[in-house]
Length: 78
Ligand SMILES: [Zn+2]
Image 1 (spheres, helix red, strand yellow):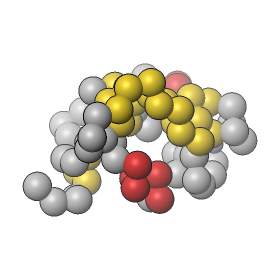
Image 2 (image 1 turned 45 degrees about the vertical axis):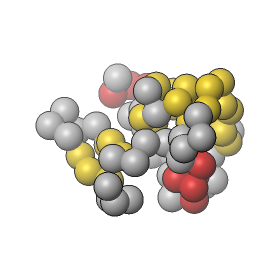
Image 3 (image 1 turned 90 degrees about the vertical axis):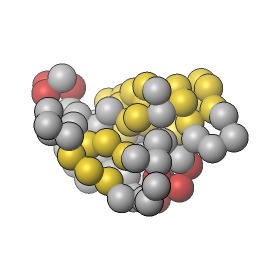
Image 4 (image 1 turned 180 degrees about the vertical axis):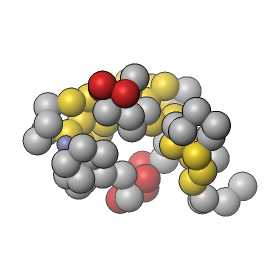
């Protein structure tokens, strides 16, 4: 496993390594490019954040993290 990110067939950005805290360094709001996003963790194991959310305070939008995968699609595109 490497730290590469890929795009699956649906066009969703996925991360082979799951949602690790250091991903916060590269994740920006897809709408306004705000960085860094605020992180709220509901469930975390020793490697990654399993459930939680990322928040853009500028757009006031939450991006959910489910099964360690951050959903960075803008709300209109969901
Ligand atoms: Zn934003």
